[in-house]
Every structure is written in C-alpha cells, then in structure tokens.
Length: 297
Image (cartoon, rainbow, N blue to C red; front, side, top):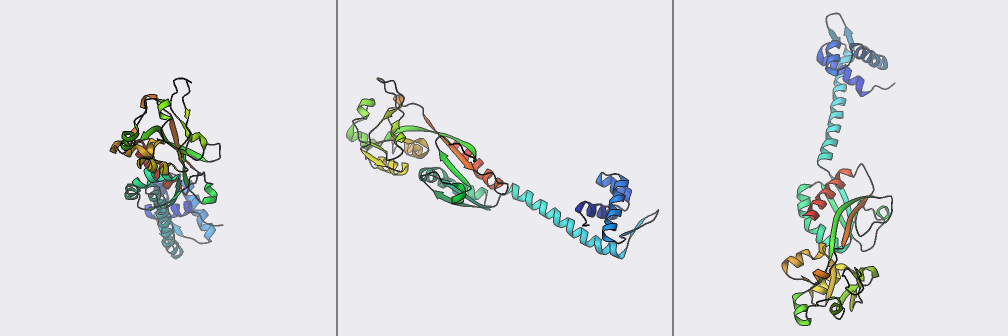
C-alpha cells in the first residue's frame, strides 16, 4: 500500500513536536489516532522509523532517511497549493475574446493597455466577427454578444446595455437641414444596414401610427456598424447607431443626436457568453469584471 500525505504529516509532526501527545495536540487529533497513523506508516514501509521509550522518541537510520524525504514531499505540496492560490489571485495564461468589430474597436481595444497593467500575466487574443461564432470550433474562451441571447448551453453574464441614437454630423445638418419630425427624417439620406433588416427599424415614435419603431429605407447601406459610423462621420447622411460606438463622437461634437424627443429609450443588451472552465475561471472573471466596470463607467 502507498503512503499518503496525512501519514507523512503525522510522522513529521511527531518528530518536530518531540512526542505523540504533543503532535496530537498540534494536529488537533487524538493521541490514539496519531499513534495508529504512525504504526500504519511503518507497516506500509516494513520499517521501524521511530524507537519509542517512556521518556523520548528516537529516529532510526531508516527514520532519518525517510524524514528528509517526507519534509521535501510536504514542502512540495505546500508550494503547489501556494502556487494555485497565487494563480487564483493573479490570473495567468491565454484568454481568447471574440466580439463584433465595432464593440472590439470602441469598448475593448481602448482598455487593453489598462487591463495589461492590472493583469500582466494574462495574454489576450482578440478576434472580430460580425456573425455568431461557435466557441468550441473557433477556440474562443469568451464571446461578446449584442442583442437578445438565443437559448444555449453556454453560461452568460450581462455587461449592461446601450441605447440607440439617431445621429448626423453638424456639417450634414447645416447643408441639408435638421428634420423636425419623422416625416421630415424620411425625406433625408438615411444610412442603414444590409442585414439583418430588423436593424433598419429605428426606435422613433410615429405620432400618426403610434408605433415605437419606424422602418426606414436606406439610401446607403453597409453590413458593419463601424462602416456606417464612418459614413455618417463623412457627412454621407443620417444613421441610427448604438451609444457604445458613438459616445465619444457625441462628446466631441463630431456627431449630433437628432429627434431625441421622439426617440424611444430602446437598449441593446450586451452579454458575455462562455463555457464554464475551472482552468479559465480566474482569467475570465478578471476580464469580465474589468470590462463590466469600464462599460458601467
């Protein structure tokens, strides 16, 4: 039979404490339990490790040899446990994160330097996809999903939500006039999405129909929100985009929100999805906690 670490700990404690009684007290065990463990260890090794007398304990030659090895084994166990604790407290390793290009460019990339400063032992690998990726197939640890989640076996964590705004540049509005209502808006040059068509339902209250959304017919369309943002910034028309990618433009005055009184407070959910993995848990938790704090700010 193989010896175990509990028996090694008993043996070392008996020697260090000088008696079975003292070792039992230190280990918070019974005297009889410590004595049995020591006897069991000697039986497994088929060797006498300690000579017991009424006054003291004396190591045999075999005991001296085994004590040195036992100390090394227990020290190695302590080092291994401490390494796990340090790893949990200071996550390390590779973390693959996937997100749509606009979210990657506006919410993740600007914060990578700060994340690296906090977690220098985590190596980020960033990929961008405009479609929903299979995490296992693409070897992705965390995917950021915008919009309502479909049912799946993945774990999900909400990172908040972001509001849709109707936007244009001051230059475009100066040249073409600012629409005062939905009817006037529909006569402007509107920039929309090629797909899905639902993204061309803008969150505008139509006073006549009572609907909370107005379906626009794009004069100019693109597949990527970032492309639409760039078109809007280049005075090509009016767009409806999420605040996560336009907040800096609004603050800087590069874009202006229009028809705010008619715009419904429609928000796009932002979620992180991932497979539960003990080996990745520390890295994932560090990244998601960091990103959630940045988005909340």
